[in-house]
Length: 413
Image (cartoon, rainbow, N blue to C red; front, side):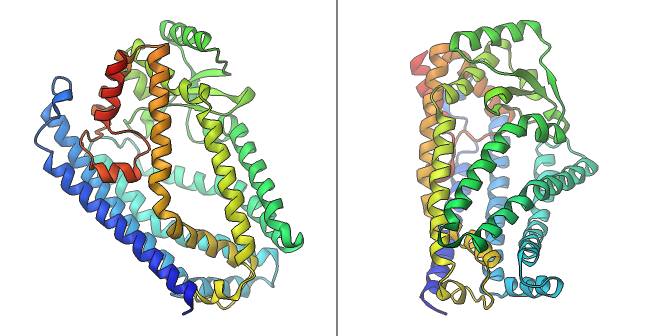
């Protein structure tokens, strides 16, 4: 094993150790605060609901720890364990060297990883989510969604992978730059077509019919100078009792989507406040900033892949004896998450900053008091813990902890 292989092992070990340490901290902290509702929420959330949220959080954390262990096994098994070499031999037995063989290797790797992750998805849906009363999905619907997902992934992923492999093989030293432009174009295309063509493949979307709520929302949109193609309600209750709202698309395809479960739980003023928060993300250009960061990161990582893919130590350090463009692509995306894992707190901090800013925007354009009321209902109904471990939350959470978020909103009301 060369120096790169040792560095890879060290990165895997460091990431796994931090995951385990943070997970056990989260379990201990949530359980330690299970029997007392924080004073700030004592009048709105019962001890029973608080304990349910604690138990749900612990169940999800244990699942995350198990999933993290699987990621370690897959990363080591496919690389140092020789799994990719076995898959290469399978693809080589079907096709001679070229694009078809490379695509086959990518597909086989994806299928192996999907098969490994499937039991976790089944357990999460039909044991954890069902135990806490969230799952509404039948086995038939689960498998229908699963195979639809495979179809969509193949329909869009295979052409993209084929284009990148062709560029890697045919466009010389700067293939990574052409691949980057291709990747950007693909993402922009997906943003445009997702609301109109992909999302309806999985869910039913209907125009909002509540005239009073629709009028209130349209008034908010007018005050904020925001135009959308439509106000849609999604049948989220078919799969889960969790509630949510989101924006999707851009330009002419831009839509506001409400889960039917959200509209059932919140009153019109609370819905308005939640929407004002989501509007804040767009008006403050959070979405554009995140897309820009994604494109900047992909630029760097594709350049890095262009640098290492011709280096023998990159393959030998990962126990791969048959270098190829497809193998380089797969290895890179298996290895990089372990080296970048410790950057997760920076990404989470940046996301939480945006959430605070969107809350402030909502308080200026709707009601901070109503947003507090809506968030409290959502914390309760979605069994979100009010007492996460501070370090676990700092490392992972894209949204601020409940106490910090509510406290800041109350100061603005």
